[in-house]
Image 1 (cartoon, helix red, strand yellow):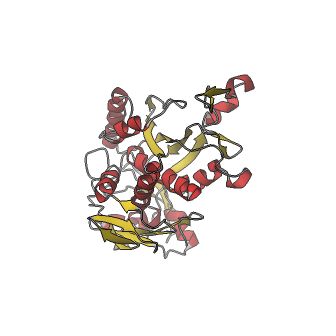
Image 2: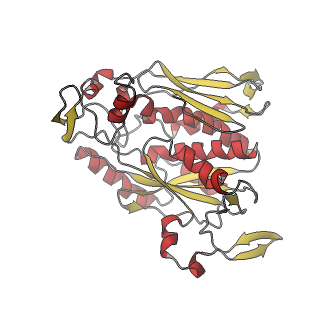
Image 3: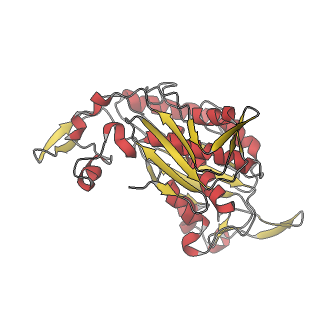
Amino acid sequence: MASEFGDKVKFSIFGQSHGEAIGVVIDGLPAGEAIDLNELDKFLDRRRTGKNALSTQRREADKPIFLSGVTQRDNNLITCASPLCAVIKNSDQHSQDYAELLDKPRPGHADYTAYVKWQGNADMRGGGHFSGRLTAPICIAGGIAKQILARKNIFVGAHLAECAGVRDKNFNSVNLNNDLFNAVADKSFPVIDDEAGVKMQAEILKAREDGDSVGGIIECAVINLEAGLGEPMFDGIESRLARVLFGIPAVKGVEFGAGFNAARLKGSENNDAFKISNNKVMTLSNNSGGILGGITNGMPVIFRAAIKPTPSISKPQHTISLSKLEDTELIIKGRHDPCIAHRAVPVIEAAAACVILDLII
């Protein structure tokens, strides 16, 4: 089983939620690129668990250990042309919480399909390789990719656009800048409108009290990409991004620009009229999400990812006993997120940054 993607830059994610460590191998990074560890740690902290009641109380430091691919120079890490390998040690596992799940698969989780595919031999403690824990190494890769892209004046940012039916303000799909991305990233809850954020948090806590969970929608943008990147049909920007985005645990839908709403518009409403501004081709609107025919048109690339509610909830659920082949009831114990959408915001940024870096190298 290979959890990898990339063409010129190849990314491979490995490990299990309750294994010794999780990590990433990146092959094809250009040599001589500096990695600011303070900036990387700040990025990783945005998805870190155990900070408040909005997420699981599993506490992990998530400090990457670089095993290869970098060299030390003037207190900085510099890529050195060898494949980069970084690991994060797991230290706060409660594997006993998952003993019952070996026989009783969780509804909405990969317990059953993994059992069928590997005849019960997959390590599914904490969700195993299917766990949101595996998004930490994605963020290592994406955090490094974001630093390299920023030096090329390309920026990636995201926010929680909707959670539990509460909506944030949308990105201005025509006029976007990195200042807004940084402002959202610096907040403890990743929204543009703080009032909407307060309402979202209240709904998340209510779900926790009810033994339930909620999902959300993340809006992400990439700015300052030149026109002409990507290929038609199967290797277009949408195809490349969607493949990686759907590899993130809990992502169940992806749309670009106006997305599904484009089906409700007339052509005269959906078409983005062209204009010249400062000798540059632009569009008056951005229903295309900055992509036409799989190729960038120079406008911000805009997409949204739907995050499903966390499957592990404490309400009684109907399931089966795999050993007895009979119906039974499951009450899940342990530490679980009432919502993972707010923690997934940097993960979506990371995935997008990796895809874009591979595209432009």
